[in-house]
Amino acid sequence: MRKIFKTIWLRVQQSYRSVSLRFKIAFLVVVLLTSTSFVLSVVTVQIMNNYILNEIIKRGESVGKSIAASAGYNLLSKDLLALDNLVYKAKAANSDMLYVAVLDPDMKTIVHSAAEMIGETQPVSRGRLFREAADGTLVTELTNASGSIFEILCPVVFMNKPLGSVVIGMDKSILVEAQNKVSSMVLLVFGTIAVLGIFVSSLLASFLIRPIRALSAGVEELKHGKAQSPLKVYSQDELGRLTRRFNEMTALITTQRGELTRYARDLEEAYVSMVKVVAAAIDARDSYTHGHSARVARLSLSMGRQLGLPEAELRELEVACLLHDVGKIKTPDVILLKAAKLNQEEFREMMHHVEHGASILSWAPSLSKYIPSTRHHHEWHNGQGYPDGLAGEDIPLFAAIISIADAYDAMTSDRPYRKAIFKEEALRRIERMAGTQFRPELVAVFKDVLAAERDRTAPLAAAGAAG
Ligand SMILES: [Fe+2]
Image (tube, rainbow, N blue to C red):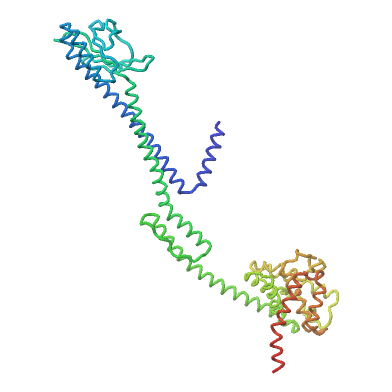
């Protein structure tokens, strides 16, 4: 059982955490209002019931005492006709009186509104004593098969001599009817208050939540760096002060963010410039490869744009191109600057430039993202490349792009041991290697890039020739 209660309590807590603040406020107000209405209804009904009961009994006592006052002389003079008249008039004037009777000191019925009861002797104590007054008036509650009755017994005293008593039976069902009417009315009033309370609490919750929602939306906008106007201040209370502080904080953060963006841009420009200097320094070791990295970057960027890469990736691609041969800084001059074709051992040493490059870039955490393109730009699409023999889509995209631009620039540049070949021939060789050395779809992109470049430069070349 305890486990079940614990589970239910946990569920309630989870639900409470997930519902909105507006619901919580409305729920709290409704619970307070309905519980207060309920308690007030119960208390009011109880007070009204007691009041009605007292009124009925007081009226019965008043009528009984009035009859008792008049009956004294009639009893003494044994004027039964006058007593009968008194009883008849009292019964006729009060519809809620079930019976009216006059008893002698031995509790024998002398006069009764129901004639068949005359001569009957009433037991001294029957039913529950409800009230006893100082003058001897007794109120008892009788219960029989037909319901409850309040019986009021008023002593008849004349000249300090007890002559008997007047007994009045009040119908309790009248009281129940009155109580029901009062209860219905009270419940209707408090029910209306509760319904109005729900409506008002909902409006109140909306009113309270409005600035909080605006603040929440403001925080969301601030988180995503969207430019925004200051939030509206709805009040001068704590929420209003919080909104004003938030507006001040937003203005400060927006200003600082702008400055940071400017610093970051300056830093990036300085960083790219530095990388260009490093790339130029590497290329400068060999007069034949002068400007190689910059040309590879230009061709690769054209391919990247053709592929629809976003601006941030294009910036990374440019730096990746400039750094792709950074490992050659460790390649000995006798190999790098050799005016003849490399032998097997020298070529093996040359191949290590990709690993040297990856190692150099690993020294700076900000450059580590360029390690894959540097390490794998000599991998082949069919897995026959180096250093890891990666194939197909396992070769990083930047590395696959650089490998085509790198090969094209090498073929179209002079080398100490051979002359440059024509661009068309270089493209044909690259196309022949599509699917073996190069990724086929990138070769197609590269072909489009060269065609677009040719279209752009052809009119200028024609104009130059004409001039
Ligand atoms: Fe290389």
